[in-house]
Image (cartoon, rainbow, N blue to C red; front, side):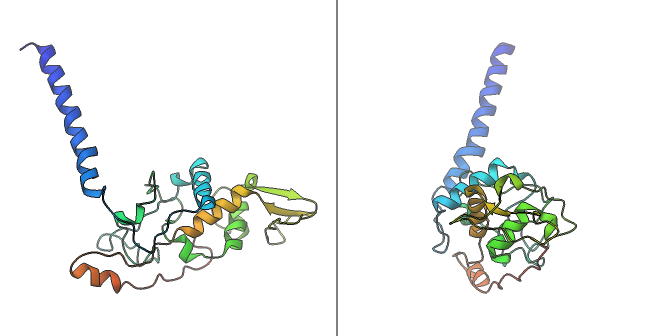
Length: 214
């Protein structure tokens, strides 16, 4: 057997191993998962907001996963009432788990911060609500108008951040992004077998986070 043959066989074995471990095995384990009844598919507006979320790189600073309480303090911090499970992501293609937490986890932000008005003002200018925030502002998702027109949603801003003249109104992208954020609620009990099910059913409600800790 020549060195070239050995090299080709080694490369082929590596590809086959990766295919089994990274594709076939996960598909066999997770491919038949069912969404919990409380987890609804995204509406058209929420799906558009998800695209806005991706396009603006939110995933680079925000994760969407509550980690096991045995190894983290995620639940103690009020990020959720239980750890995330694969069923939570049935409608997410691709999933947006994220790895960085420059900003807070958003897995249950719709439960923790359910006010649309808060999110709109926060997206327009985070420092208007949280003085120490390092989150970038997204003013390009809004419009400055002299007068609000019929159907416009006016963003309520503190005087220091409101325009001297006119009003700030939302664009469809801003409305969609907030609709997506408000849809991020995973505080339902996940049906699992055995004793763990009872644990999940007894999960405590998410402790409301204080304004300024999104």
